[in-house]
Length: 160
Image (cartoon, rainbow, N blue to C red; front, top):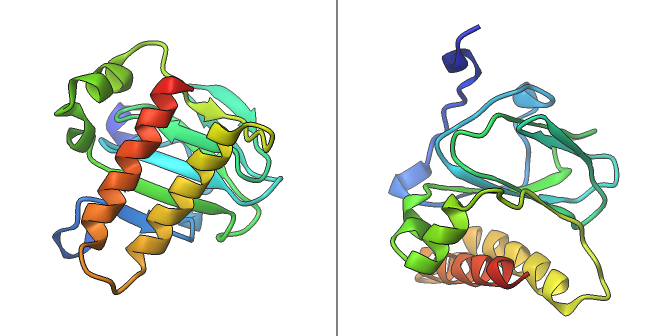
């Protein structure tokens, strides 16, 4: 089967550069797919699973999965509200040399196990939750604030 058969088209509303969802599209639940965007997934269930480039992960609450553009992956959840999902074009990060190296480096870190005893782990989870909170907030400059949180998340990932 052609790689194009696994392509998932993503829609960004209102010209935004960042997509955020509290609900998983159950039509792709467990389905192998790829897209040209970065995707950060925060597990809200101990029953979620994810595979990136055929490397499987059983997740617990607050575990993080990062999928880079073009990577074949699947995520599975018992219900549609088992993930927090953030999607954005890699160009948001590639303009900064430090983050560009992080995004383009091999091997990439796809899975981050949550460790409540590690302050950095807690900060990364709180940063993702703040992005989600801002996305649904009516306050001004939300997208700019989301971008700042995202930059902070990737700076922490680089130091992780």
